[in-house]
Amino acid sequence: MAAVNKAIILGNLGRDPEVRYTTDGNAVTTFSVATTETRKDRDGNSQEYTEWHRIVVFGRLAEVCGEYLAKGRSVYVEGSIRTRSWDDKEGNKRYTTEIVGRTVQFLSPRGESGRQSGGAPPAEDDYSYEEGADMTNDDVPF
Image 1: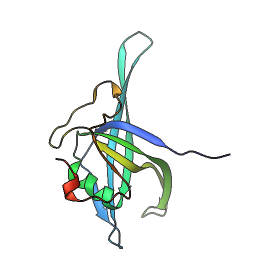
Image 2: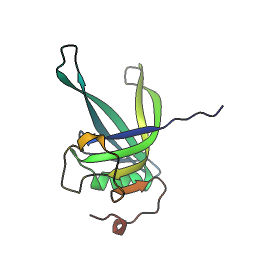
Image 3: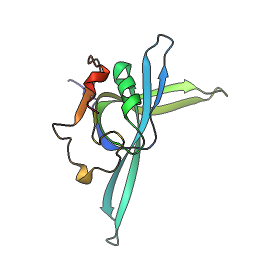
């Protein structure tokens, strides 16, 4: 039996992306994306529930995300879920779960932020970049 590990997130950045470089010079960018849904509580009142997702991207895609994404911008991310562990300064085992982004679509123009209405899927003319794609600054349309 085959296994599938795929995550799809459509939301807004909670902070500006953080770009770091490995000792090999490869870019690693992390950012958080909020997804919000509205549900009715027991009394019939609408309640908003927000979930935060930690996203990590690598290579040229990481550089493009670091350059063009910003707090508040809408983004669509496809990738896989990964949990990793490390030992903190006190020697305690720590864990984090994150989405390794392989495709990122910028849904709001540069300099513009805001929520996407109704969780609609990305439109065909949105700007999409995939891991491993050969990209230059001329490829970014804004």
